[in-house]
Length: 83
Length: 154
Image: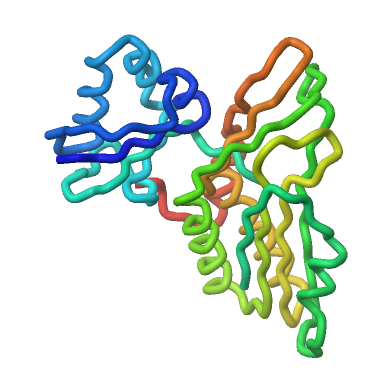
C-alpha cells in the first residue's frame, strides 16, 4: 500500500527529508521501521534508538506495535518539547 | 474555547481583555506565558527555532483543551503557541483559563501546560555560540503528567 511518511526535528535532519511517499507491505509500525532501516545508513542511524522516537499514525500518537493497515500518514519524531 | 498556532507574536494584555470582554460571570482569569531564556544551563542561547507538525498540532491541542474542560468548570480557555524563529526575551506561548473560582482556573492552567509540554507536537532547537542543538525532553516533564493520572502513551 502507499503511505505518506513525515519526519520531524532531528529525524528529519538525519534522514535528510521532511517526508516521502513509499510503497510498503509492513503490518505494524515496527515492521515499517525495519523496512526503512534496511534501506540506507541514514535511516538505520535515525532509527537506531527507538526509545528516542515517537510515532503518530494519521496524526494520533501510537505505539511501535500499532497496525498501519488503512493508515494514510505515519510520522516519526523525537519526544515533544512544547510549552 | 480557542486554540491558535501562529508565527506572529501576541499581546498578552489584549488576549486577556478579549476573554473577559462583555462577561460578568467570570470570577478568576489565570494566564501563563512561556518565554525564551538567554541561558540553558551553562550555555548562552542566542536563538530558538520552534518546529511543529501542522496537520497534528491543532488536533492535539484541541484534545488537551477538551480534556481540561471535562475536568474543571471552565468558562473560557485559550491555548496560543508560536512556531518559527524566536530570540531570547520573546514570547513562545500562552495559556489562559477562566472560571467562577480560582482553584479551577489555576489547576486547569497547570494541567494544560503539563500536557502541552509532552503531548503537543512541537520541537525546540536552540542556537548557541557552539552551534545549534535540539532540546531534549526532560524526564521531569513526563513525570509531571503522572499526577493527573493520565493514560499512558499507547
